[in-house]
Image (cartoon, rainbow, N blue to C red; front, side, top):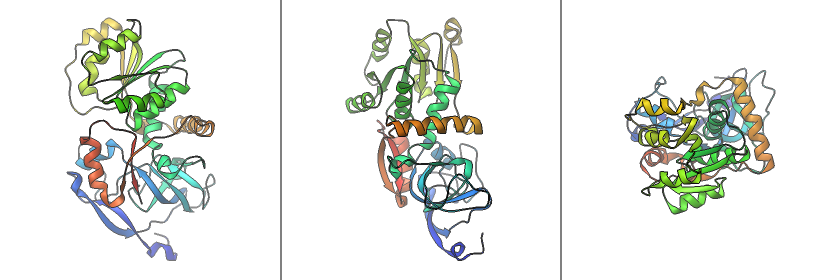
Amino acid sequence: MGADMSSSKMMKAIRVSEFGAPSVLKMASVSIPQPGPGKVLIRVHACGVNPVETYIRSGNFEKPPLPYTPGSDAAGVVESVGKEVTSVKKGDRVYTTATESGSYAEYTIAAEDCVHKLPDVLDFAQGAAIGIPYFTAFRALVHKARVKAGQTILIHGATGGVGIATCQLARAMGLKVLGTAGTPDGMKLITKNGAHLAFNHREKGYTDKIMAATGGKGVDVIMEMLANVNLNKDVEMVAKRGRIVIIGSRGTIDINGWDIMAKEAIIVGVFIFYATLEQNKECEEYLFSGMEAGWLRPLVGPKYTLDKAAQAHKDIIESSGAAGKMILTM
């Protein structure tokens, strides 16, 4: 902690003292942290809620030392900077792609290379919807699927934070974008956000309609948000030598290796935390140009106040038909 007066000031933050159900997310009063060299202190106006934060909280993932504050995707204003920080200054509007002290809080500390300028055209809730969703979408499309303009892509479960981001990016990259949703409203939502065609994945025979839309050839690239339910359907729908990118899975699935072999299909996982600094820089530049050009517009979904974080964690896993990015506001 720094020795100046602000180090003794307090802030509200969500703290997790044991792994478990959403109820372990507790509001607490803690000291405002101070930025060391290369670090930035941000006054958080909004932060994104991501499924990965629920996996960590439940203890089913890499376990941080307890107690901790969850969250990586914050948007707000730079409060102060540590020594050697040159890319941002006090008063700048920013969003983060990772934090060191957690983003479910009124203030957060982030390393300089995880702090990015937020253009004035986006509000803080939209800024909080960029981090994991858009960086995951870019990594999935560019670094894993290696998409090319003119290819057909299916976003299987396109209405959530990552799904909408993938629709917008894929459309901007010149792909023919097919998306699925679970409701008629969801279908409208994804066509508004870049999908050329939308399909209802709760309808019997929807995979036949997708195949028909490709002239029977199958889809070049599939982005899969729920592999434990859909992976066999993806293998049926993928084109020869096509790629399936797994972005989300919540269980196991039996799969016939012959079907993958017969198509020479590639199934690859994407996990944003393995991205290199160079890859993140490339993504940041691309996203900034999209924000400025106007096609990158994060879709904000349900909003909760910080004290309702436990309810948000319950809803992000249990509520069907996600629509946009779930946000906590301060």
